[in-house]
Image (tube, rainbow over all chains, first blue to last red; front, side):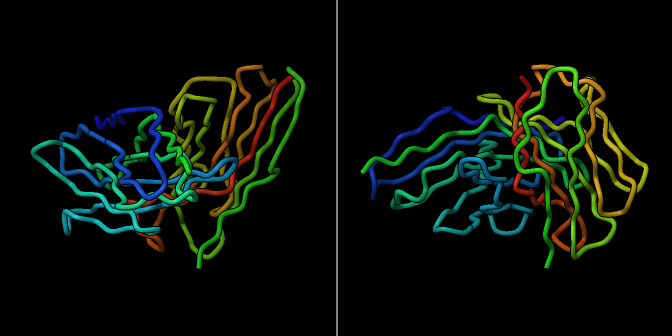
Length: 112
Length: 114
């Protein structure tokens, strides 16, 4: 069975600072990994996904994530935070033919 | 392109009343369909998923049920709502059109049970 742990339920950064949201996964087979973003009272929007191609994955809105098998991690980063990045972020894992398993989410606040 | 619709967007219901939430997908055929619930501060909980008409898998025992009467229609129901059923309900699809491994979410339904 797969599982996802997101470290930190709430992360606060200053505008222009680095954003780092942490995700560790557990999977008995090579995983597919995803990051989604959710704005208040909206559905989830796909930011990026890793499906065993390049380990560094670039997504929308300037975000990227790096798959590190040795660390079982898939952390999300953005070099410079913008006020519009304030949202909840979810990491998820699957094996390709199973429903996604989500982490509990990390709320990102951006301070002006 | 594919789109997913959910309605209603918001709903306020008394305890003990019935529930019917609808989800439809356009622009693809034979999608996998999913219902999730998001309660405050508790992340996403998978409730049901379906790989075809009439094929429903239940992930969590509760007073909710799901049906898939048509290929691109997924309905979440309850005969008698509980206070604990309050939350944000999200429908999602995956399939060949978008990559079988990737789920795409609808806008959600905010349910408040009073």
